[in-house]
Image 1: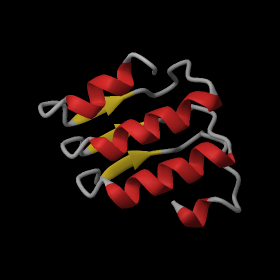
Image 2: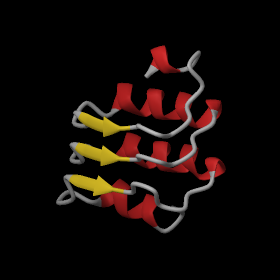
Image 3: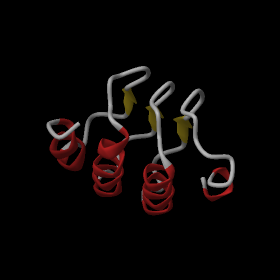
Image 4: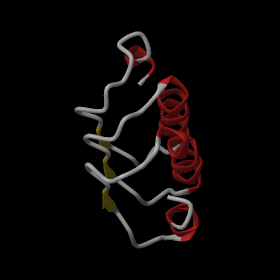
Length: 88
């Protein structure tokens, strides 16, 4: 994810990204969320099966408010705390 973040920030051609079941630590999700805030071209993101803790879910929610181009995000099987889900 640390290598992916700069690519997302500066990429104007990538519209869909599948990271489903990718080996991403919960600590890396905030970095990914920050990169998503900078990207205005990505429309679809698949994070299915990645464990996302409360901090990561909060960061993703914040990035989704900023990134209006992201219209589809798959968070199934991410074990997100049900109390955090409404913010997403």
